[in-house]
Length: 316
Ligand SMILES: *[C@@H]1O[C@H](CO)[C@@H](O)[C@H](O)[C@H]1NC(C)=O
Ligand SMILES: *[C@@H]1O[C@H](CO)[C@@H](O)[C@H](O)[C@H]1NC(C)=O
Ligand SMILES: *[C@@H]1O[C@H](CO)[C@@H](O)[C@H](O)[C@H]1NC(C)=O
Ligand SMILES: [Zn+2]
Image 1 (cartoon, rainbow, N blue to C red):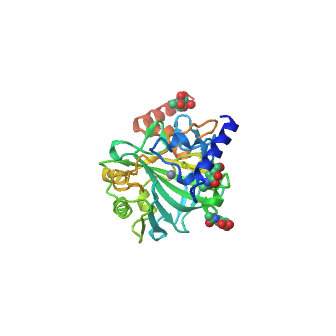
Image 2: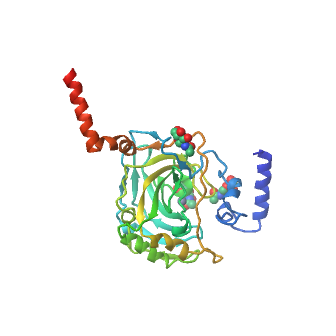
Image 3: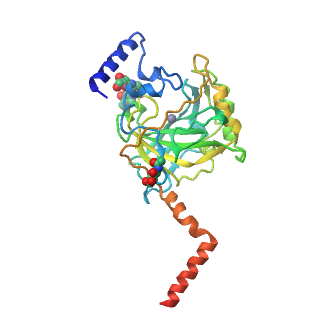
């Protein structure tokens, strides 16, 4: 609140951190320990800002934008571009080589995928997505991180429109079509159980395989931040409300296989929702059409519409 107080906290933080050569915000924060959890991140970077992520997307309050049509993704079917998987102690992270491009309305540049990672709770027991859709939390959330004109991440974070993240939910379902891609992903997790473990990926799955039949025309759009310190406010978010359905075993695999450096389980690695403030969330055209069009598509409603139109014409 009081700037002088914040300055003191920052100075104290620097003094405390001075003993460690590589000390920075990025290795002193955590999720589940109250000493370094999300409630303490306010002192780091922009984490106390007014345009933070994630948020709870109130679908009734989202503003329709007819310009927002299907995103264009090129190269996402190429599994050879996914070069390695790493357990970094906070999440499981896949490095993406140059070649996957994202274009779309409301995205002022061509954005290139750099990496992707996930957030989760405690498996089927407890959901752990970061964004909520009208108060609903999903089991997991996949973030594909892209930078403007293929800038490196540190340069992209200097630009308020430097980063574009695509967010997809994963939901455990007994009705899930068996997905070989998520089964392969889960097999790879077993090779990186401990923080700093890395495994080379040899074209075992592609991002298109992981996304499956998700509709790239149905999404919400807003401006926000990274969801980890330094919480830099440089992200154009695209959040897809229709989850990727996966087998319950996939959702259970993450918290049960992965551990951090001290051997503790890697779970509940999601930031709580932040306030929307005076920002606006936009809804893509396809989301809007599905709301207004679905009753009219019902055969009975359509017949009624035809009859009333005919009656109107008759009277004229
Ligand atoms: C995070 O923010 C702090 C304070 O603004 C800064 O000193 C530090 O260099 C930042 N760290 C990174 C990784 O950007
Ligand atoms: C969601 O938005 C609608 C429409 O603006 C509003 O009436 C409602 O109170 C909002 N719900 C919440 C939980 O904020
Ligand atoms: C990012 O790119 C800029 C310019 O291309 C370069 O100066 C900088 O060292 C790079 N940073 C990293 C972390 O690679
Ligand atoms: Zn993330």
